[in-house]
Structures are given as structure tokens and as C-alpha cells.
Image 1 (cartoon, one colour):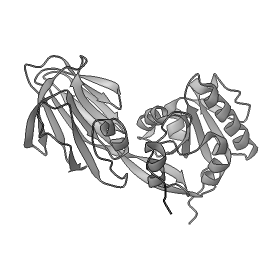
Image 2 (cartoon, one colour; image 1 turned 180 degrees about the horizontal axis):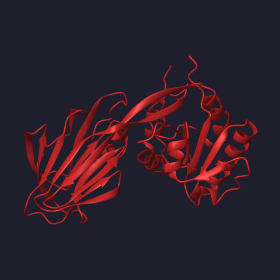
Image 3 (tube, helix red, strand yellow; image 1 turned 30 degrees about the horizontal axis):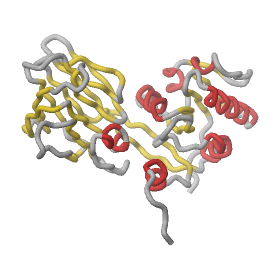
Length: 293
């Protein structure tokens, strides 16, 4: 079934990358020829030949103006764009100019034709939820947002920490480990997967708690309802700790501080070509076996 078409297209992507520049220039040419309204992120505009048919602007301007944002780059670029755009009512799609590309659907060689079909209404849409983290101390409150995961860890390499974990104010465990990963279904194929966590289908309303090198053999990943509130309390004899949101946006956690992790109030709208299959993505990116018959 054909979906509503898009009219205003924002373009953004990896900075200082030759492949990204070539893809952006091809998209700009095709979009201008088809008379779409186009706005190019201002850092990208300094690296391409935008032509006279498009405007340039900041990420905030793109979020307020566009119907859809096309991110050219890797998953890291998609994550950064998602965190910046999630508070705006704008759909997001990616062209893969990175490595794995779990979040970037379109291949560079097919990007123009595939995007034109999507803009015309030939796409499927899904909502991905995000997580927010609040660090509460005696005098300071910090906040961060993550698409993939929120991680409590030491600010030193390979350093064990101690903390308590509560779910909806119910005590779950105290733990000595390198930290803990709190991941969304989107993030279940990222850092959480490397730590031994399960793969969650994006449609699931669930989050995972994955211990990082725990000092007990009985510690295992836990899957929770995504509407739960997770509270981490840093032991008072810890050194300086940190919270990382998608590997960026680090927040300081002092001994005795509490970290509150819960659903972010806004979701991310992702669109895919009608041929998109999540299981095909898993087979392709993780090297699973193909059909025998």
C-alpha cells in the first residue's frame, strides 16, 4: 500500500569522506531535477557542489523544516542524526557509506533510484524508541539520550566498579564488574551483542541489561519491559565513573550518585524500502548461512 509522499528532503552525512561527497552530489542532482525541496546540512555544504536549487542549514533547522532526512554514512552518522532529530517530526533513512550498516538501508550504487521510490510513497515505516539517562547527585543533574545503549563504566581501562541495580524501585542485584550495558532493540546488534547480549527484534517493547565482565559466573543478561525504570546506584567507595550514550555524550558519575534510565518521550521514525527484511539484514551483516534449498 502506497504511503504519503515526502516533499521536503534534508541531506546530511559523514564529514570529509570522498564516497559520501559523491553520493550527496548524485542525490542533489536527482532531487533538484525532480523538483524536490532540498536542504543540505551546513557542514556537508562546505564539501560538495550544492547548486542553486537547495538551501543549507543547521541540524535544528533541518529537523524543523524537513519531512525526511537522508543520512549518508555509517551507523555512527545515523545515530548522531537520530539523537539530534528525534525531538522533531521527521522521518530518517540512511545510505550506507560505513562498515556494517545495520541502520543504513540503501546501497550507494542504488541510492538514487531507491530513494526516489521511497519519496514517492513506496516505503515501510517503523518507530524506534530511545533511552534517556539522568545522573542525579547532591548538586548536579545531567542528562543524555541514546538510540543504541547507555553504559555505566569506569573512566579507567579494564577497571572493576561496584554498583546496585533497581528496576521500578525493586532491588535486583549488587554487582562488581566492568559496568553494565542497558540496550534498546536497535542497540541489541551493537555493543550489547559484543558483550554477549541477545538480539531483539526492533518491534519488541523491551530493553536488555548486559553485565560487562561480571565477577560472578551466575550473572547473565536480563530482558525487561521497556516501560521499566532502571536505577543504578554507584557505591561510595568507587572511583570516578561515567555514563556513555551511544559511545558519546559522556556524563560524570561520582561515588554515591544515581543514574535513572527510562524511555525517552520521543521516538525515532525510520523508513525503509518495501523490500526491506530485518532477517536479511541479520544474515548479511552477521554472516549467517543462506538457504540450502
